[in-house]
Length: 131
Ligand SMILES: [Zn+2]
Image 1: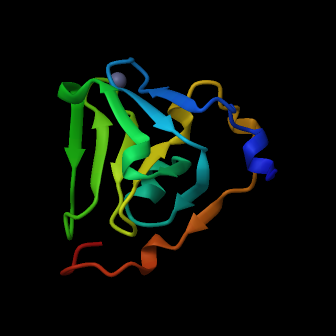
Image 2 (image 1 turned 135 degrees about the horizontal axis):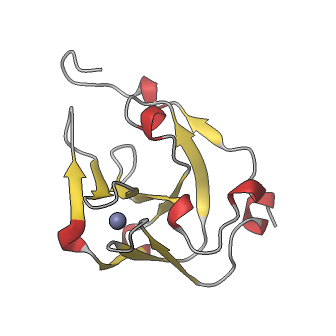
């Protein structure tokens, strides 16, 4: 078993929510692909993200509370709670899957997480002169 698995709860369903609790989601399946990213948005967020297939991510409540931020190619969809401001999840451009904020997941000990890869998001092509 990889070290990163030891840091995460082992239940089949992971429950996550934003800081105020308006946005709640569940992850079905293993917590996988821990990463940070150096692209222009995630270097500012600083969140550690994990990945979930499209059918492994379920928004349980709070759709009306979600803000959506898109930029440049507008392929990725970056969601956040409009009340507390916390980034909860996003739909990726680099791969057809969700990313989500591991800090939102119940029971995760962020001190026990392994060294986290920093994805080379800066190398992704952009449109126009945007950062
Ligand atoms: Zn919130």
